[in-house]
Length: 286
Image (cartoon, rainbow, N blue to C red; front, side, top):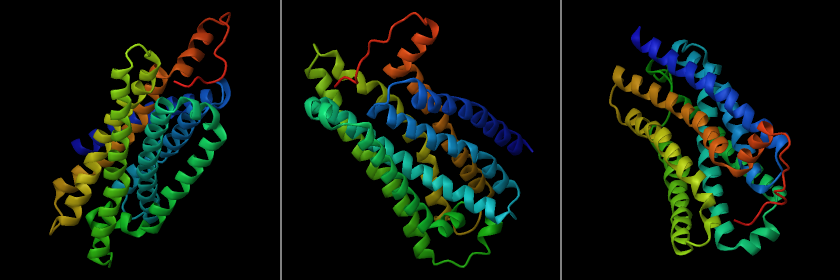
């Protein structure tokens, strides 16, 4: 009973916080701020996070009404999709900021919203491909033990799928995220008189720990699930809470955008003071 109450409270907090926050970021990025490459990244992230949060009731349903196979399959597949897309998007965002700092002239001429949108579509397609290809395996790994007993899957394929999920959806993107971030930090230290070089760092230093802390337990329990010789109640409980934790990343991301991102702050200032003139002009090469 306590487990059910705690699980319900966490799901409710994630849902009630994530839906309005991501809806607001989506609205502002779509209609209220200048359409730039940077706002396109945040717009695409808000769309993905909003869709992920909206499917949260399916996670609750699939854990406590295991007979609903369609809800369980859809929930697990969309969780996998969001994991891959989050990793790919954060990796692209860090590389984009690195290019912005290292090659400002090139970025000014070639870094366009249209190019960013094409990259987002490519990441959506790539994430869907990874998720749908192993949909039955995700359902096996993240389903309650009573459902997994009915699956007849090759154990080697299941372990390989979990390993691919960890490598492609977490470890490799994390390495590729940290390398450009360290470059930006080094550049910021070497260019102390150029405060603009530190602008991309504010968002990244918030998004990277959030990504790491919210998704690491998910992968840890994935390996524990496939390594366990027999189902254990604590393992199933931990896996359930690890899945719920991933939803909190979708609540924290828009907070970083709204409190640190310059264009969102400029919009909020204009809302508070309608007489303020927005002389921002085109997006600067930071």
